[in-house]
Image (cartoon, rainbow, N blue to C red; front, side):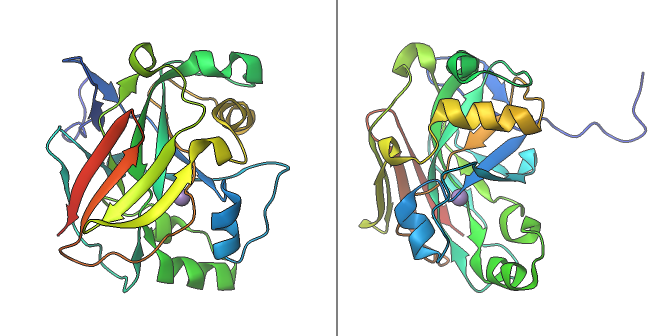
Length: 231
Ligand code: MN
């Protein structure tokens, strides 16, 4: 079989300690997974079922080990950072039981769920979808992935973001309303998960604006960090 146009490249992430890469299939994101962030957004803290949205796989800006350069997006005056733990799936499935969910995890990383906050506020006010606020080009700067064989399944640990050397966000993944197993379980009720899926697990409090020239450092304590600049 040949394609009528050039085959689009498969977005992928580097893997710590490996020459192989992790091909990104889909990017799922969890909204409002830390109570203090839900409050700062003026949203109710929902503990029943998580709220999901998606980004296209090619929104990834992959760290090759020396940091990322992220272009300031079009059509916004309010680009916000949301530092998040990323979970990369090596196995998928449908209706995955919570007790089986962690067996699907390939590894962990840290990334930014970049958000056009002004467009998101306008969409919320009109009851419109969030795609233009969340799923734009280069909206998912992402670290290298650390395989489970190296880092295990982290249950606690600081999740932080510094901008120009100043602390902006500080949370602990132990404070997620829905933990990793619950997220995978709930996602798999709605979509058939596949190897290559990447999950952004929500952001702690402290989201704020980024400007051109800002340098950031996102870190999942003891596991992985991501350095970058907004260009
Ligand atoms: Mn987010």
